[in-house]
Length: 236
Ligand SMILES: Nc1ncnc2c1ncn2[C@@H]1O[C@H](COP(=O)(O)OP(=O)(O)OP(=O)(O)O)[C@@H](O)[C@H]1O
Ligand SMILES: [Mg+2]
Image 1 (tube, rainbow, N blue to C red):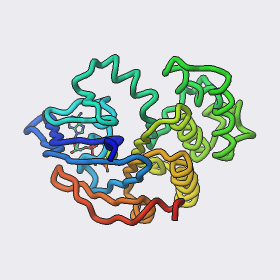
Image 2: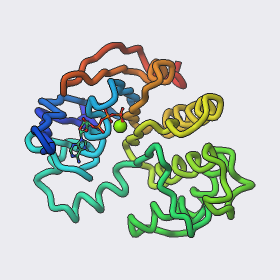
Image 3: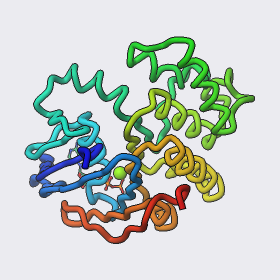
Image 4: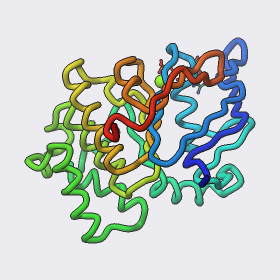
């Protein structure tokens, strides 16, 4: 069997608090295979955001390994990781992080710019992704002229532009009302399945979590497997 897209062993992370140190991760073991979707739930403060930052290596652990397609990335340089990250993974956060001075299309194309590969094929793919998320009529709208749900759909298109193997999403619908959140999550899960991208989805919503192929729960700094079903929703 091929290497998992993402694998960790023994991840630990301790934050220095004003009074005492807090051990947020205490040996997290995680393996995500190609095309698989995994949800991660857990109480507020359980360490879900910290874990996603470490999986992306935007934050570094105190101990343990992070492997991207088998490569032990903590042994590589920060520059190597930064460049590899641009094509290997897409990131989606609760608060969109669009560049306010760029329109929707240019925001999506930023992913190609960062990877140093902006060509006409990427421009066509950006338009195509924006059409798939229902924003064909919003290509030149600035983020300030888009609704929250529309902004998050732009962020999703940006995350998928470089055909990553993996998308990490931290409460992508956390800032949206229930109806819009459900709509965005539908598009999100469907597109990740269609593009055969592995997905790690942090969510507080049990109904969204149930739609991924495996359900994990973070507790006491470790990961528990709480459920799974064959294939992703879109494959069934
Ligand atoms: N830079 C930091 N310095 C000190 N403590 C931190 C830092 N970042 C996070 N923490 C602490 O680590 C713990 C885990 O935080 P984290 O943001 O990962 O939780 P979470 O599971 O994402 O919570 P939520 O569901 O509320 O988003 C919290 O107790 C937090 O106070
Ligand atoms: Mg969080």
